[in-house]
Length: 265
Image (cartoon, rainbow, N blue to C red):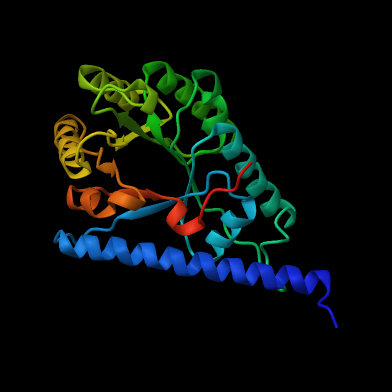
């Protein structure tokens, strides 16, 4: 006798969740091993990047205890943030991810890690818990205006912000360098509704990642002489976790190693 549609959906959900749990635990083990090798006692956060993957995967990740999820594209991130609101309100919208008799998980922290157009800052400020990709004063000021509205309307907390550092000046990969980087950091620190938490870096394509992370760590050290609370150093992805953590990364961003290949859209 064939399984009912409900039984088939539950079986699929269990299988997907078990797969995500195994991969998530595997990456966490890699992080812990890299920390130990670097002689570090502090924690390193893992932001799971769910770009192009369905909202149901975010729900599975929340159920297995992944506290931080990241997105690259504003529109997709906004859609998933809205889905979390709907899930909390009526429990709907993620039936394929919830197992029979299972409660709705709490919303994880949502990170924006991709480029933000200035015209979309208000939208990001509504849902993001942390932004890794501030790369202009205009973007910072837009986030500030949007977050102030959220604070006044719903009592939201200040928006945690990291300024994206470019080590090679390649604008196509995002970020800023030199004096402009420090000017933006200074502006974020003084804007209401924002909290300057540190920097994010995507290493250049050319050269050794370890050297790039060391260079970024030096910039971070200089930043902290002016802004002591800017402790976060978002650096490292699947292929360069060890080098990033050795250089002091406090937050790594991993997608494919946990979720698998991105769906073809």
